Length: 414
Image (cartoon, rainbow, N blue to C red; front, side, top):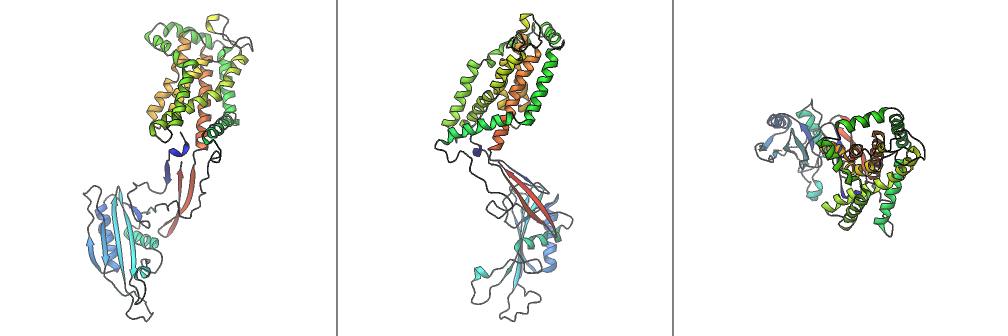
């Protein structure tokens, strides 16, 4: 699936609230009792302005209805301009109840002078001095709830921020963008698979496999498995899972799924199937060469050959289970695409079934199954890192005024 077809937004601020539509300059005040918050707002406005109109918010409707406060037109204190008729001001306050609080927006309007454009002359002022509308709302919020930090929504994407504008993907200018995209992804897959961090983990995994194979662990575990699991219905179930690890069946399915995603790109179902097929194929492409190489480098034999599990380089080619590798791919690819911890864990468990089938059929030792599965897992990590690399991720850090203090918000989109 094209990375741009899925967009996620994660924002961090002082309080997490729902995204009810509110004015651009509104702030969110957390509150358990929204009716009490409204009463305090009325009292705060009435303390400094003669309130002439009150529309109570409807807290019982779904979604709740907003409340409105309007003051009478008054002459601003300290106005020595000498104009006639004198300029007068009033305050208008909107409150929109939301989950666990309410959005508050305040504006001080100034009557236009004679002969001026009325639309251009309406000013939005501070609670006590003429400044911008955001400051008006924040001053009112601090008067209504001085012990609460109001939450200011992030500015729109078009606003000036400290973020970096998104760039076109590297394949955007190619004559064949879909083919170029696959090429860039595979190259990035290999770069991730052979990164220093990944190679350290691979070395540790093969070190553990060497200890299992060249000590009595493998033969002891294999004998115990053959005695306790193989004769049972669970052993029969594992044996029946072997075809899932057959490359002659799995690879055409992966390819067909990837082709479906290309043909139906933009369709939700087609994108999901295509992403799964693309991930699975790329996992095979990135993990297949080291799998084949390590099968010969380890040089181990099968349990049925009665020569033990010890490594003898280039003596045989069964030191890593190919079936365990291929059989884990579709489940690990699907696990990387879901967010539910329960479903993800279930898919991880299912990814081991083909490996257990090789132990049940006495075709591979536990170390060989483990190494085959681990190569599939390492390949899935490399592919997932590629998906994040090309996911058109935007990170913005923007300032948030918080009453008389300052704050910061971080937003990530991918």
